[in-house]
Image: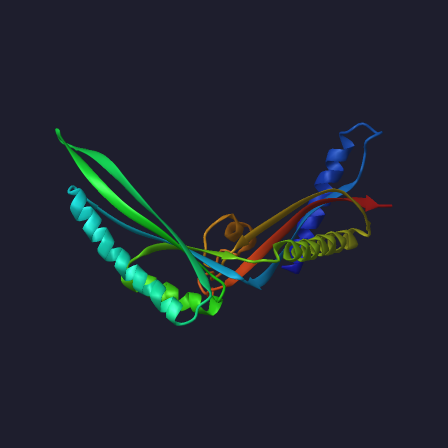
Length: 234
């Protein structure tokens, strides 16, 4: 990996040097372009569950009754949390809508009853058991993991990414006997995610064979990148 980084840095210097020859003499900077990366692990301060309980039927009364039965299983889960003294808060709202699906020449009018329950907890160690319960009961849910001190962690990660970019540039220029000058242009990127989740962060920061399926509940990752163009010193 060290030699690959050196080669890429050298290629960047040579390519930019060739480009500079095609520009007018008064604008002829020698540049090197590098990308620095860093990642930090953090523990979430909040777990926000959005649980959806929904039933649909052609008979509105059946849809309501079946939905009510499934909501009752979720209410027992919430009651268990309260009995354990868990620090949490809940919000809920109901949604009913009519779906019209054309089936041959006979349109079917279906009623869907849905309740969404939001559970916000700060005792992250109890999030894992709650996930297991919801899965066992067959409830659809999503979890958002929130970190309180995001700004400070992002500053730290970007600082590390900038140091990584500088080290890569210096390594490449050392081979050519050159010195690193000041940064001419800097672009900053941050992304929060979990190992095992899909998204741009996995493609940008993860190797193809990286196993991202082993996250513990509450474990979140901050990915940072800096895209820097440095001048090459005299």
